[in-house]
Every structure is written in C-alpha cells, then in structure tokens.
Length: 330
Image (tube, rainbow, N blue to C red; front, side, top):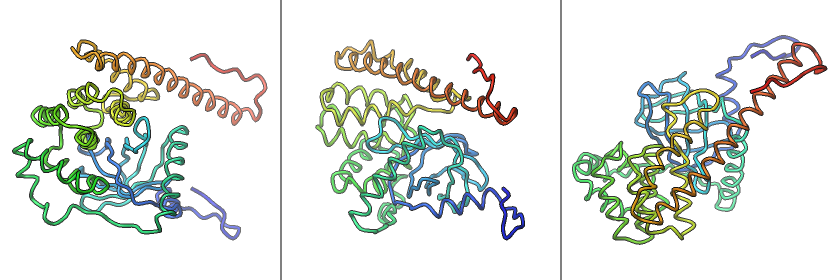
C-alpha cells in the first residue's frame, strides 16, 4: 500500500497495516466457539479469546502459521446463525494461539459483527474494564485422556462443571471435553441424547453448549432431535437449536454462493428428520426447511446485488462515467 508522508511516498506492507488497524480497534474478551477452515489440517474447532471489528485472538489445536488465511464461523449467543468471516489472516502464532486480522468479510456480516461489538462494548463499559484470561484449570490437565475413553463419565463431569459456572464452562469443562472428543462420536452423541431425554432445561442448555464444538456436523442430529422433541415450545432453547443448524460446514462448497450452497446441503440433511416418529421433530423440520429456503434466496440476492455493484464500479472506473451502463443478466 502507498501513502504520502511529508511529500514523499511511503510503502507499507499490507500485513503491518492490518496489525495497526486491529490494535486501534477496541477489543473485548469473549468465549465464543468457532469452526475453523483453511488451516494446514483442513477443518476444526477453536475458541475466540478476544474480538474486535478488525480481528480476534484464537485458541485452537489446529496448526496455524503466519500468512495462512482462515475462514471462521463464530457462534455468537443471540445470533440466528454463526458469524461468517471469509478471510482471517494469521498475523502471529504461539503454540495453540494466534492473532487474526479480518481481511475479507461480506458487508452483511460486517454489519452483524459491528452490532455484536457495540453490544459487547456496552456490556464491558457497564461491568468495568476488566479483561480476564480464562484458562483450563491446572487440575483439569491430563483429564481428557481419561474422559475420552468413557463418554458417559465425560458427560457427567461436564454437566457438573456446567452447573457450577455456565459463564466459565466454555473455557473450562467445555474446552476440556472438546479436546477429549474432537469429533462427536456415535457413543458421545448417544450418551448426550440420553441425558436430554431424562433431564430438563439445564441438561438441554448443557447439551447445546457442548454441540457448539461441532458446528456443521450432522453427527449431532440425534441430540438436536431429542432436544426438539422435548422443548419445541421453549423459544430460548429452540433458538439455540436453530443457531447450530444454521451454522453449516463450508468444507465442501466454494465460490460466491458457498453460504447458500452450504445451507442447501443442510436443508437436504433435514429431510431425514421428516420420517422421525415424533410429530414435534417433523413439524420443526418442515418449518425450518422453509426458513432455510428463504435464507438461501436472500443470500443469493445479496451476492447478485454485490456482483452488480462491482460491475457498475468497474464500468465507471474504465469509462469515467456511467452513461449507457446496463447490468448484465445473472
């Protein structure tokens, strides 16, 4: 990038500018689960440790090297689907943590991020400017090897930690369980489903908190269906179910319409719910498939509008005016 300094032209690296811009933005300590793709190790999970409008600090077991461009799908409480960051460039990496600069983000997602940051900064101002770094406690170290062999024990322990402190759970018990079970195995899903079937709201909330570790995976469907069958009239809990379903895997799609295509894949996976013996599950599937249809149409229109805007801008740059411009058919 080139900019004038005292009448002279100074060249500055794009990476340095990104770092400077990121530091200029206020940051807030958070505990948001995210799916990460684009790493050397393909797709995985992580936890956003702090967030700003221009970047974040990420903790993940994935190999993250400076210069890599990652794609993030951040599960933010209260959002209908995960916040989508198309390009987050790794600025620095230290063991399992990395600093990321957001270099590619759609306008609609930028607006959602701005709204999230406004809310977080207001809350931070009310609570005082206290930024705490929450780590997995020392007494938890090494437990993942034990818990990974016994899903039922892992879930019992996790529920106890969740009951003690829900706010701390993502960084403590939740982080530990995500390491013990990096994928939602059939045994783990079955044990979680039994917990939901026999439990109440606390068990449903705990299960949804755990499923944030597996955004985009259909391996969690049986647990989600159990939650739907038990809590179909609970607006808050059903909002958590929708958030997980609306945060699809992006590993198998590409191009401008990849989010719409990922939602299409998710919609098709919901057709299996239509044969479930429980009426609540079938009704939810029908309604949410219709909602996904509306989301897909809206997303395609948004991409087409952005494409037309780029065409107009390119035409004006080339001709110096917009006389005679006609949008190309899509």
